[in-house]
Length: 274
Ligand code: SF4
Image 1 (cartoon, rainbow, N blue to C red):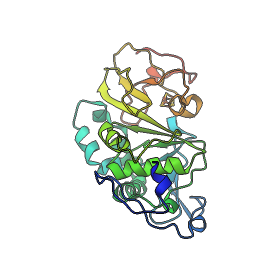
Image 2: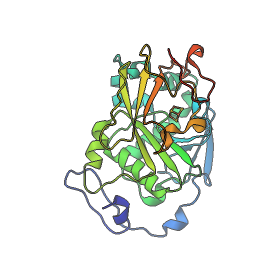
Image 3: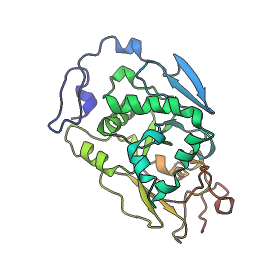
Image 4: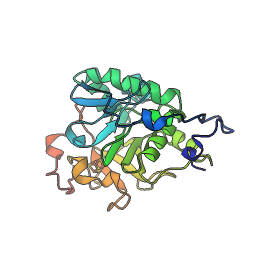
């Protein structure tokens, strides 16, 4: 059963306690509407929108590589998993998000902390889910899954916005597997799960269960890169099920989130070797 299928009618916890369903659906159409209609704030260049106190804020003006792609982010800096990973020699040890949120994107932290809190604390009611007005939306240009509720909320946002394709980058295979192995949950076809391989220079070419793509980072590996230096909106390889490949390879970025000039492509998707 799809979780949203039982949303308006029932309350329940599954046997593993991973989710709660909600009771009633009074006057929801009146409460919903464009997420941007109630208020918009400008946080460090990214315009955030939300209509109700519990509604996650949508960043509609991402910059750089994500220019033109909407995003729902959370706060990397307060994420326990991210903070632990940051001290390792994985790609998290090079985390551009930590650097940005502690320096020139500091003003994004309050909005993305709001998202961390609302997405991880409760399975949101349908009228609290944001309406996405774009064709493509990224879950977590910044941030990482915090817990099962967080992932279930993303699944529900995708299901409730069938006109938009969402891509979620995550290293938390454990959370995805635990939720999607449960017969009560299923993945909507407009949600693409990208497993973010933490190991640098160890390109993985097999896609994990329930995932659609693998994102790899290389510093010295000779595997051809098909992502480095491009803008997502011009590429969309991660946002399409029928892309030429599901194995993505990018050069490690510097702390500013930029790919070194020597590794940048002309944006046409050409392969570059390190
Ligand atoms: S492969 Fe394309 S869509 Fe995926 S992250 Fe790289 S530029 Fe973006």
